[in-house]
Image (cartoon, rainbow, N blue to C red; front, side):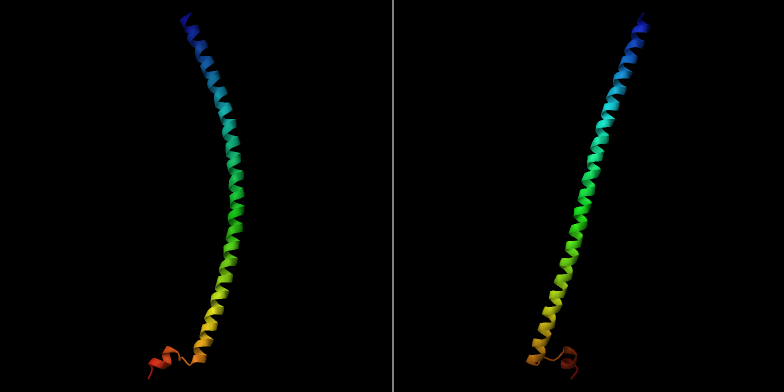
Length: 89
């Protein structure tokens, strides 16, 4: 009789364990799906930011080139000679 009771307890414990495992797996699958969607959204935003930073860098480079060109014109108008000619004397 004790063996039958032990077997019934083992079956009940195994059944409860399987049910809890199945419920837990469903919850983990839903959580994983949410994380995947969040990663996709973040990837889209990061790609958008990357494009914005690239455009900003291009604009900054163009402005620095413009300032450098203006400074070169001013230096030439004032009469400053390039270092290679000034030091070659």
